Image (cartoon, rainbow, N blue to C red; front, side, top):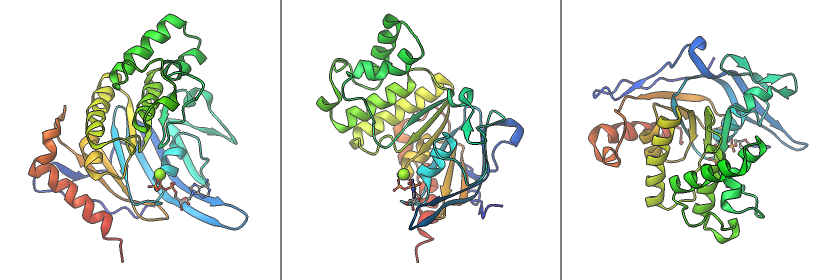
Length: 284
Ligand SMILES: Nc1ncnc2c1ncn2[C@@H]1O[C@H](COP(=O)(O)OP(=O)(O)OP(=O)(O)O)[C@@H](O)[C@H]1O
Ligand SMILES: [Mg+2]
């Protein structure tokens, strides 16, 4: 059981409470997930009672205050954190078999973290193409793909640069290109644009929208930014402060493709305002 409080239906009908896909339709599913981190001195309950089903090609944003468990939720989905309770299912298959993960399921994920995590001794194009090299693709086709992706994320001309020669934002864009290189079915993104300036971030939001559409990927996107969350998502999941529980799930029924001007409409701003109130109502 979650303590889920579903959001009220907005008069505009653009944001409605959501139950999401059924278990049978789900691409990704968290069932009764709890995560407790135990160290010698501390025990932290990061997540509890998380039930969430995400449909094929759905774009789900996850928001919540710092420390509420967003990264833990994403890492649990990606199989990088093993749940203390509950099960992660991908296309109906359990992600975990005892203490090990199903390698076939792990191949479906492309993961992008807060830090770019590039290999400093490889150039931009080599970093982008690395997953393809590991999958045995020939050099010509991987470099072709690397250049295509460098262009997509605005790094044309920097393909031969090393990570130390790039700005933080450019490193992050390299990491995004790398995660897209092998066309993953499921993209898991943890505050990928936190380090980018506002203009680049807006541009990347448009890129992510078009990438999600063209690649037909299912996306889970963690962010602090409510506007970004609403702009990108089909549904916004709001986590309560620690231990993270699902406080609300909001359907964002705004037409696609979405242009940046949408953010200035009353309909959009109503949704953002409602979510902001929910985020702050836990503050004593
Ligand atoms: N590996 C770990 N070992 C111990 N505690 C951890 C570990 N990872 C996370 N935690 C704890 O779990 C809680 C949730 O952390 P998490 O990183 O998921 O939050 P978050 O919502 O992503 O925060 P932020 O918005 O600042 O990135 C925190 O109290 C954190 O200290
Ligand atoms: Mg985090």
